[in-house]
Length: 427
Image 1 (tube, rainbow, N blue to C red):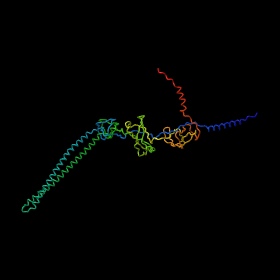
Image 2: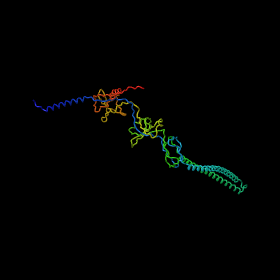
Image 3: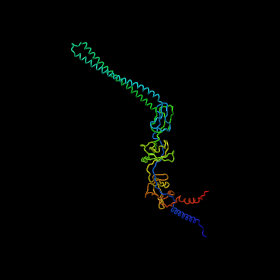
Image 4: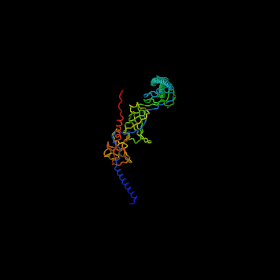
C-alpha cells in the first residue's frame, strides 16, 4: 500500500480554492445591481429669494413739544385716527397771550399817533404854502418900492418893505422845515408800529408752538403725557404712524443684486396672520452698498388692499420673486452624485446605468434643475437612479426594482377586502 503524502492534499485544496475564487469574481462581474429610479419631471418653477423683515409705516413720527409748560388739554388718545393738521394737544399759553394783547394795545396807540402825525404833515404843508405866498407878496412889494422914484418913497418905507420880505422868506423856510419834521415823525411812528407788528407775530408763532398738530394723516400709536403734566421743551407727547402706507426694508448681500434688479413682486406672510398670503411691490433698491456689511437694502411696499389688515411692527417672512414662472426639468437631489466639482446623475437606458454630467440650476426643496436638456443631457420622463447608484460604473447592467407603492397595492387590497364587515341592519 503506497504511503500517504499530506503535501498533495494541501496542493489539491489550494487548487480547488483558487478555482472557486475565480468563479466568484466572474459571477460578481456579471451580477446586475438592483436600483430604484424615478422619471425626470417638467415643473413650473420660479427663482425666489427668501428673507425676513419687519413691517413699518412709511410715515412715522415721535411728536414732541418745542416749548416748556403745562399740558392744558389733550384732544386725542392712543388709537385715535387723525387728519393732517388736526389739533392733538395744547400747552398753556395764557402768559404769552397776555403779552400779545399788551402789544396789540400799544400798537393801536402808535397807530393813533401815526394818524395825528399825518395830520400834522398836512397842516405843515399848508403853513408852508401860505408862507411861500406871503414871501412872494412881500418880495413883490419890496421890488415895487425899490423901482419907484426916490422922491415918492421914503427910505424908511423902503427899509420896512425889505425887512418884511426877509421876514416872510424866513417864515417860509421855517414852515418847510416843520413840514419835513412832521413827515419824519410819521416815518418814525410807522417804524414803531412795524416793530410792534414783528413782536406780535413772534408771540403768535410762540403761541402756535403751544398747539401740537398732526404732521400727517395717521393713527396715534402711543401717548406719553396726561392733562396737567408739566413738560420741558423736547419732551415727547405722542407716537404717530401712517397705517395706509406700509413698507418693509429687506437687507440682502451684494451677490444677489443682479437677481433682484428685475424683481418686481414680493410674496410674504406674517406669523400674526397664519395661512394668509400677501403681495408687495419693490419700488426702491438702495443705490449704495454698505461697505461694512457688504449688503444693500430694498424697499417693498404693501399694496393698499392689504394695508388695513397688516400693522406696523409685524414680523414677516418674504419671498422675493426674482424671475417669472418658467418650465424646468427637475430631478431629485437623491439622484445627484458629487465627483469633486462635478455633479453626476445615472440614467437608466437599455437596462444600463449611463453616466451624465449634470448642469445644475435652481434648487427647489428636494429637487434640482437640470439645465443640460437634449442629446447631451436629460430628456423629460427619463429614469434617473435614486437608490443603488453609489460606486456604480458607467454602462453597468442594472435591474430596476419595482416601486414600493406597486408592491404594496395587492397586499393593501387584500387587507382591505379581509377587513370588510357586513353592514348591520337598521332596527
